[in-house]
Length: 139
Image (cartoon, rainbow, N blue to C red):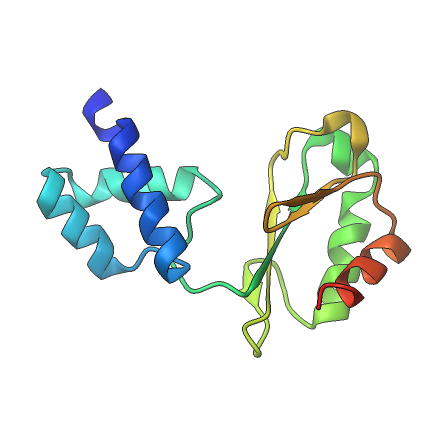
């Protein structure tokens, strides 16, 4: 089983993700045949890591933490204001392909919640007003 999780495989998937913004069915088939790995195992890896996507995403990928600590600090309110502000639901991308919203289990900043990450930038101790300001200042 270890051969499916080798460093080179994750690097290859990451390169595909970086190049195209997502990992397509064709990419999965190509990697499966090249590495002699069942497609089901590749789907398992891709769905496990929140950095990988199976469909195109927006320019800005917004991930909001919904772990216990963030939830207790009202992360649901943060998600709600993002949905209302952008006019999308969880796991959707805006029509202009600018924003994708994801709710994830943990972003590793449990003492600073609620937390979100937009691409590679973390935002901590969020309030609904702070989130709207962040979204309006992205471009």
